[in-house]
Amino acid sequence: MSWLSKLFKKEPVLEPANLSLLKTDLHSHLIPAIDDGSKSLEDSINMIRTFKEMGYSKVITTPHVMSDFYKNTPETILGGLETVREELKRQSIDVEIEAAAEYYLDETLEPQIKTGKLLTFGKNYLLFELPFMTEPPNLASFIFELQTNGYNPILAHPERYGFYYKEFEKYRELSEKGVHLQINILSLVGHYGPEAQKIAERLIDEGLVTFLGSDCHNVMHQQGIELARTKPYFHKLLNSGKLKNAEL
Image (cartoon, rainbow, N blue to C red; front, side):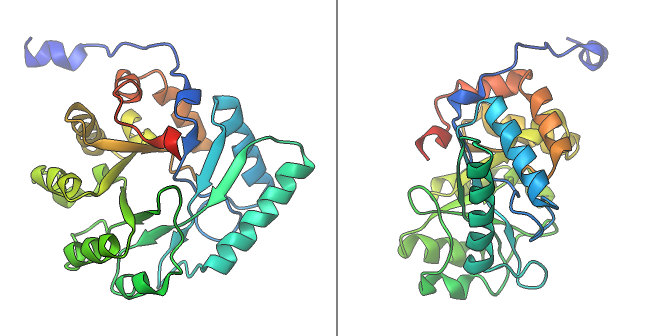
């Protein structure tokens, strides 16, 4: 096939994937007014209701924790979780919701590992993200400390880290070290740009993705998820047998 025919080749549109097969979304920002996600309790409830309508039965929401910006603590996160749970109960919305965090890897995070205060979910999974400009120098030591202290690391949206785009072997190395890779659903519709989409698809092709997350901040993101459900790579990942969402 010539490059010109590839350019104009239409991607097939499939029937929307059945999200009840995933059961659980593990990356979102649904606790109101504590990070750049939900702005109000009403927004939170509306988004959670939409997740239920999509087929999810459980949501693990993960507010940002950043030492210099979103200074959330277990108390602020779990307190917000209880507020959301109470409103879900009041409105008789039957969705299980838990909370952990999306930890930003800077120089303040690694020393917290031994405190026992980091928020986790499932099999002691800890979700963390990297700076978008460059790999932090303490990444290897951070992963080692997590694992030797009984945590199972999950790297959030690896397809968005441009410094790995020309070093794809880094993704394999992380996976071989026992780091789970969680891609964002919206990457499969180009929400973060064509390069992020290309890397997400290659990660799927090579069987390196073990978690799929919405990274939902607002209702617009959920509209993108609806589109992603019709994409071949979404179906390919859902049917790969690699995803562990349903185990959470």
